[in-house]
Length: 370
Image 1 (cartoon, helix red, strand yellow):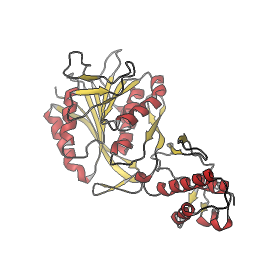
Image 2: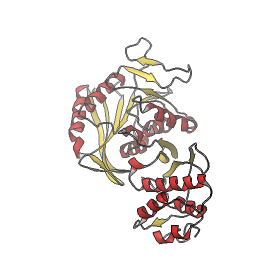
Image 3: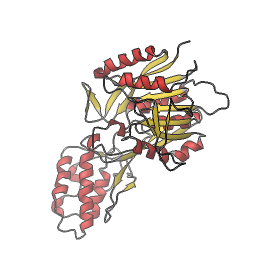
Image 4: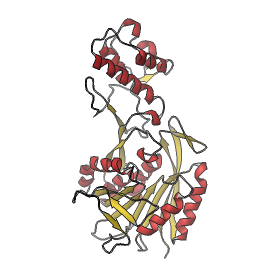
């Protein structure tokens, strides 16, 4: 049986609609079915699209291939995991091509992992639509497979919401000069890349050493689009426990990593705008984040800090501490609000749970007291 997308977009497919092993289906029928069953992370907006890394038959090197469907397919989940498991365990003796067999096994494994939560999924890339003053701007973000407890390798709801809110921010008036923006804890880079395009700004996106390679990759992927909006972006390593030192990753002009510091004679000017999203995960984070803001925020009265954090009950003390620390360095809040978004994970008692979950977030804008 050759599997194909149904003509009726409302039709629901069942396991028994797919090629059954006892019929010895062709390899192409099985691969068509596994493509049909592709399940990307739930889109946070209907306009978002996803890609995943898949291995074509007969090759050992992975490449990026966009998976498309000819129609919106709905599948009854009952018995689906068992069906995929049977494909993984089958020897496919009637198929002569070993490379094709491996492809079927791998694709069945991917379809099973996709239904086991975001942490079990392979690397993906997805496109986010971000509003600018003139039009919608598409940003392509790559997220590596989450093989460790490194939360900076995925895009969180607060980052997406902040990126979409940027065009409403009233920024310092700098005349004809290019606006310089610093993002702290940039993660996958969605917010900083969006800022470069929305404001036509020069943005420095920073995070820890283990996050920097993927962050740099995403900046390079979107560089042409950023420059078409008269913006620019660079990445750097900035450890909040040593906030005075920031290390470019890499210095593309010199071909080497270069450092600069707030204490050096040829230091860059402080930043008039600092952005941060979903960056409070431990009791020490509020103090570390705020001391870094204090190092790098311009002393001008019109300097701004804009943040967005999820309102998770387990991290209420961190949010309260953040507010206190911000006041302690002479900043006061000028705007705030709450909004809802979605994550690939829900949350239960501060711990991530499997499946799409609605997230309530708090955003705020801060400036120096006058």
